[in-house]
Amino acid sequence: KNQIENVQNMTELNVKEIDQIANVINGVNEIVSAIAAAVEEQSSATSEISNNINQVSQGIQDVNENISQSSSVAQEITREIVQVNDAAREISNSSSQVKSSATNLNEMAKELNAIVGKFKVDV
Image (tube, rainbow, N blue to C red):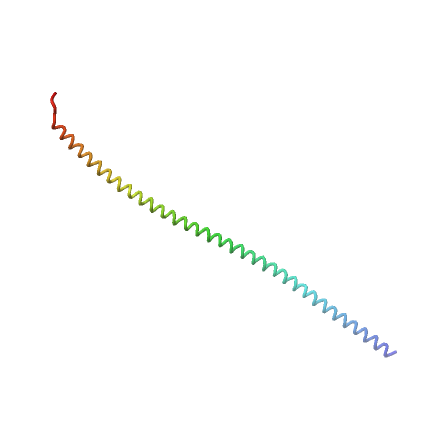
């Protein structure tokens, strides 16, 4: 009878220890599941951050392209302003020449009138 009680006691002790081991394993499983969920969440967040970085990078590239185009347009406008300036200078020079020629022509007309005025014809 003692042997049976000892076996029963040992069996009961073994069952309790197996339950404790099962509880520890369940606890470890819960921790591993929580870690796996956190890793999945972090992976998802990392993927979203990566996508956002790609979008920002594309946006910066678009802005740089627009700035480059604006710079090209500004350079073209500057060239055209220089051309307009040159044309205005030429017009100003031509205008001065026309005025000078008109003044000379006016003086010649006066001289011609004076010369013609000397030839009076009597009728």
